[in-house]
Length: 489
Ligand code: NDP
View 1 (cartoon, rainbow, N blue to C red):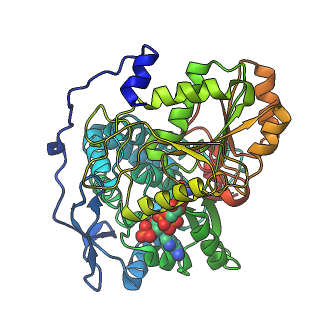
View 2 (view 1 turned 180 degrees about the horizontal axis):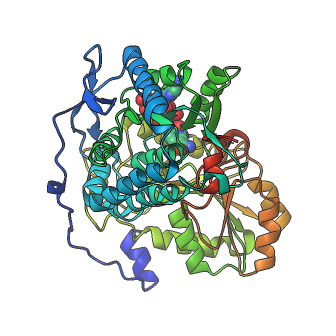
């Protein structure tokens, strides 16, 4: 049945939207970008560059410097000098002023950041505009408030910074992950060397410009663009005191091995395979919105995505049918169009991984469904996809697909829901949908997940700690807990 037939049968209205493209003119992308070291942009020591592309059009966006070992040395050394001479000795009340300035500049230049993020990452403008950029600014505001109150954070009477932080971040929330890493580190008095992902370096470089604009002393924040070997060089560098990583579990394990025995403090925020649990007494319309937000937000490129829907058997058919009708209304296409719900997949490589795992899902016997939707000819796209008839042993129920793909499993009792939710090597997040507060508490206490949302999903706040169990990593980011990772307390 076509999307409009499905909708018509239920009296749903499929709205026709006129295009509403956001203007690209608010951002000027330079033809070339250097590394940001000691407060200045400079080419890589060996002159190498790479060209990130717009995943919605495959158009190259700029030439960006590729950091090599000499650049890692220079950035770590600049961060050390800034730590010893300026940032470490500076009173917290003064450090706070810089963080407040960065936060305000992010707000002032929010539209510029949002457009650049959507161009570089492929995410819909309404997400970069309404989620990524405001949350990034909120993190700087929040941690600015802590900079002169560290002794009141419950981490001891005189917590001290660690020194130089080496921070490696992924491509799914490029600016937001930079803010999650930089803001607490700087508030605590550390200096930073940040390595953004190869496919999405541009907003980190714009943030470096904002650091200049805010008058941040040279060397306090350094940005090394390049490939995974720059990240590996950074985390292994003897001049780094603290390593913070967000990305795949595989690379997280490599980093844990590289850091073991060095005395460096390490936090890892890795993958997930979250259960979004819907009980038979849940408000269905609200739960369906939560399921959609849980797995189709940011094309499912979300470590805490609700990628396993566990729905009580008695309502499973009704929930899946309602979900399919809702998915038929999602709009996929130009990330810069303000009406777009589903943007582009971040890279050809990631698209290949999603395609492979969905093929495996079919081969293992699950039933695949997507609404009728036209994929643009250029760029990397994948339609919202739902697998029903999934069992716990299927790879699509166990592995992180990191795309707009939902696996639906059923359960009969709360005990079974908890057992299935916890049957994963990960443990980052979970969702519970029910009318009963007592059931929320009962289930939440038994879930092995760092974050549990009740009757909502994918809610973030800088005051709220975030992190996982098991293969989802260790340490917490956000809130008071996020400071602990950057302090010797
Ligand atoms: P990676 O873990 O490889 O990348 C994350 C960051 O680490 C990037 O900046 C990357 O650089 C860098 N990096 C890569 N190798 C090393 C290394 N040996 N030492 C230090 N840093 C390194 O993720 P991918 O982009 O390859 O994605 C692969 C899969 O990981 C996805 O399909 C998804 O399942 C999962 N993922 C999970 C995320 C999460 O938040 N949980 C985020 C991103 C991915 P570069 O980009 O230059 O390679």
